[in-house]
Image: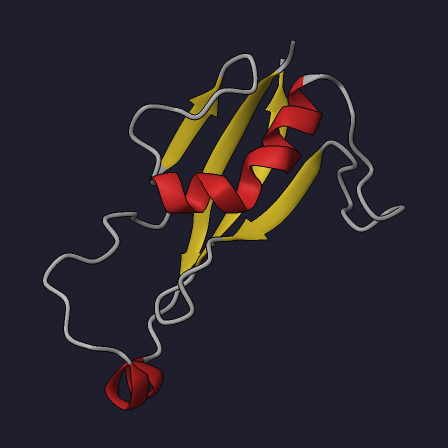
Length: 100
């Protein structure tokens, strides 16, 4: 199986939406732009957010077994994908790619 690198490339916070719809919470996302993880055998890296993993799991597993070229040429690198976590208030975009 191939190793898959997961990199947080962008983190955004929608303060206007939070003010309108979100109840105050004490702990939010700990991910930092530029932070990266390595998935081995298609498994979730220990320190990766479980909710972010839910959004990318199928893509990481597919890349780990050598699949790719998602959506017929969506990515310039066919062995990669750009996936965002499911937090609509502070989404993080992750670039996932196979590494040798």
